[in-house]
Length: 268
Image (cartoon, rainbow, N blue to C red; front, side, top):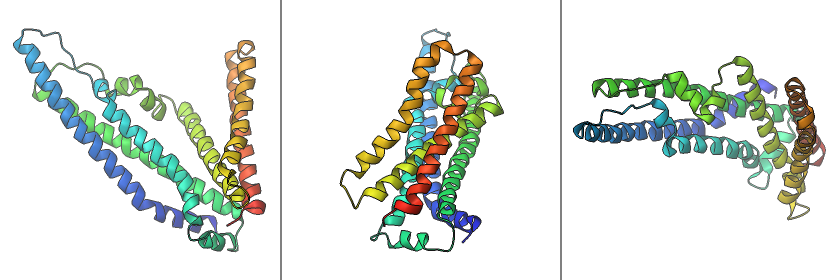
């Protein structure tokens, strides 16, 4: 089974959870937007009756509220959990399904990269759908404010840039977007490596989660400590180079560990 067939198969398996997540996010965000506009309208009407006209509403006020940020947090948590579940589900039933996958006539790393590509496609799909949802929410927001003659300030782009999470999801430059996607890849690789190490040791010791987590903490901490010692001596360009090298090292080490444990150490 080649990479494209495995990828198609994994995408088919993730479709229902993905659509469920999207539906949940849309319900939460649009539902809260309706409540937010209703509440702000009542507050504006009260101020106007009191003769206080110093009131302006911004789309960033809505984006900064807890329910909207919570919806983004739920999406991040679901993607991280699915990054682990995409492996763990194949170990259910005494690992017979994973055993079938590992004995298929293809390189085991093909399975690894198919699952990685699935998670990245899921992430980019969420980014695209959330962008469309934000545009629709902004249209609804401005239409409501115009209809109620409520003063507004700030543009759509400004509202996104004021929000830390959305600013990282949708940066102003393509270069920054690519860099942020690389960070996402690194996080997913760490999750994959954790699962593969833990599954490799789970029959030998009950401490397999602690052992696998300890290995990854060491891999993560060494470059961070290195930067802590060197940060005062590095100029901006050197810092960029250092961060780039760290990302390459993290990616290389996690892929190497994943390959090693997947091909030679894995128990099912």
